[in-house]
Length: 390
Ligand code: TGC
Ligand code: FAD
Image 1 (cartoon, rainbow, N blue to C red):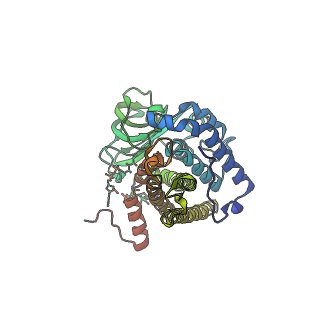
Image 2: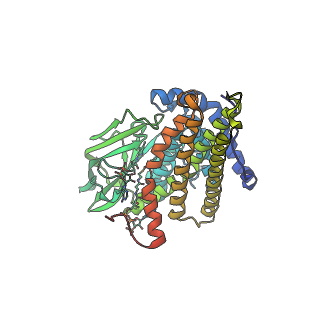
Image 3: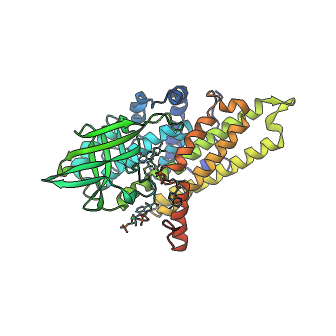
């Protein structure tokens, strides 16, 4: 495989701090040296390379942005760059880190008791424990407010019943952050996956995110102590605030996947000869490269601005929705076009473009589909709610 040359057409590198560049370069090198050699086998055989978790922990990327104990406290831009570099490797790798940090550690850190924080945050940061986040249900995806999973009071504690589906990291997790209705209001519960009555089933047969574990969670009379509830979260705003964190990372991440595709296709075009010339010398090939690089550059600029706003405390969920929606749409289009530009080699596992393309189909769907982010932004722009419109 040719050495990766990351596209940076507008010299955004010069707008980064030295620390941000160092963090980015450390993760970029780790992905090249440690992840790229194993990703194709993991993807084709359908497993997450768990043995690399201690190395990810060593890089400080598991919840590394949280202000807790001796965590490295990565700033928003450094965190975004980490996501970009991880997803340059594979969306499944970024998903693992996103879920662990933004969807499991973040709610415990933001809404948890001191006891929950002490029990789980250090273990999740060091990779000794893996977490998963259960919001989606078989009958409630885009509309999580309709969830049927229910907790009822039982003495001092609770009893949990219901099911979650499409849950990243499920079968690898020791702990699940589960969202359920208690007296009709959504609350979060920190549930050890070995609790009696808790069953986890892997969802096999995906044609996307194959190097990521996806599972169904089933709760049948799972008894929980009073200390299992997240004391600070009440209502749908609880899980949605976690999604703001994860969607922020996805906006950066998918640009990494698009950068990997662009680099592969550009290098291929320079060496693949047809009609006696490199195919990159043909105008149609160049036009596709130009479109791809332009969209990558626009998304990189949007992400950097979003990161600086986040640093200053000025980012809103609407900025995040626009960045996630835009970056996923264009990354997927770039990957689809890139697959075509590689000809027959575009379907071979030796090249990474089709793997990214298949992954991005999921990334466009999860954490709010393209349509749902359109409706979120449409409501913000007009003040009119089109979610339930006929
Ligand atoms: P709506 O009326 O808009 O809001 C209900 C309450 O929530 C508050 N809220 C937010 N709070 C924080 N951040 C946000 N982004 C928020 N959006 C809304 C809102 O203020 C309100 O609060 P209150 O106090 O007034 O009750 O809700 P709605 O029922 O109209 O629903 C719309 C909504 C927002 C749920 C929908 O647009 C949506 O986002 N659906 C998408 C669901 C989704 O993204 N699921 C993701 C599951 S996790 C996942 O996919 C992980 S993949 C990870 C990986 O592998 O990387
Ligand atoms: P649906 O909500 O059924 O939507 C189907 C289609 O209808 C979409 O095109 C959608 O845009 C459209 N649609 C829905 N509502 C409207 C509307 N009002 N107007 C117009 N169009 C609409 N969830 C978790 O909780 N935790 C996880 O860790 C997790 N990991 C995932 C990993 C993978 C690989 C995948 C694929 C999904 C994961 N999810 C997870 C679930 C994901 O968040 C949901 O799939 C997503 O929110 C969409 O829900 P749905 O699949 O039920 O689609």
